[in-house]
Amino acid sequence: MHPPTIVILGTGGTIAGQAESASDNIGYIAAQVGVDQLVAAIPSLAGFGSLITEQVAQVDSKDMGFEVWMRLAARVNHFLAQPAVRGIVITHGTDTLEETAYFLHAVCRPAKPVVLTCAMRPATALVPDGPQNMLDAMAVASHAGARGVVAVCAGTIHSALDVQKVHTYKLDAFSSGDAGPIGYIEEGSLKLMRNWPEAQDERAQAAIKFIANGATLADWPRVEVVMNHVGAGGSVVDALHAHGVQGLVVAATGNGTLHHELEAALLRVQAAGVKVVRATRCLNGRVLPTPGDVLPDSKGLSPVKARIEMMLELMATS
Image (cartoon, rainbow, N blue to C red; front, side):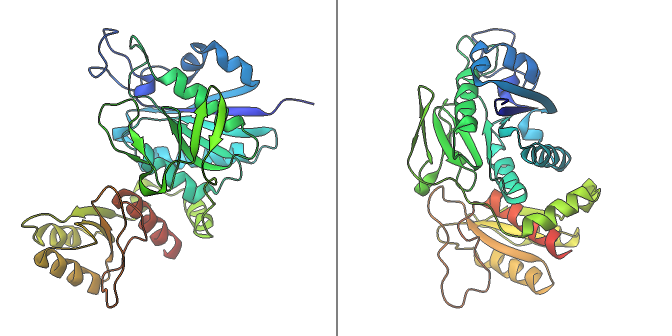
């Protein structure tokens, strides 16, 4: 009987970055080292048995786009359908990892583990964090009973639903907020604190059909994020409406509060057919709805994840 296979998909990021000096942890160029080189540099990965590696993209994740997302979702679904594949590891940049994780969670609905991992230091660093993160991600992908899309960084397992990047420089740059992490990896063994993330609903099928039917970048629904702040007005909302935006997520203050001028503009465009949702710019907590709310809340999603959710909803109804 053949051992189960782990698939490693590379997309670039700091984990694949290079700097001119080993002492330089920030002046690097991301997405320079191929996934095969990353794997070859970690001999311990051979202990996980059969591996398949594939370079899906090679980008700095600040430049992540819908074209890469479509390609990545297609490859994830392809490998999830292979009976011999136990799990998938994806190397990714930290900047937009939480968005890619939520997108894959929503459209792939994996019953197997799909583990995004990353690094805060480039591969050329004197003490890079990428190799340990890779080993930890492999431990999760190999774990019996693991399922769903998760992120692994600095020995912590985060659900795609909750993960957020919360620090610009620390190696432990991610948090799951109020929900807390799924668990931890301790010397290759998992210590679980709560359940694995559950698959999303039937909207995933509509999104996959949209992507599989040859959707182009121009076909993706246009949804933007605006922010409430001191003196926030409605001119940005009106300008976006004039340029054909289909949805708006507002990163509101506190419990979904909005400057009266911004709120008036959002109500105008909502009445004109633009989908509007309120999230909060606060790191923790969620917008708690109150009776009579005219602008709906994001049901606990952060502004960037609420944007993805809105795009998927627009895909499903288009």
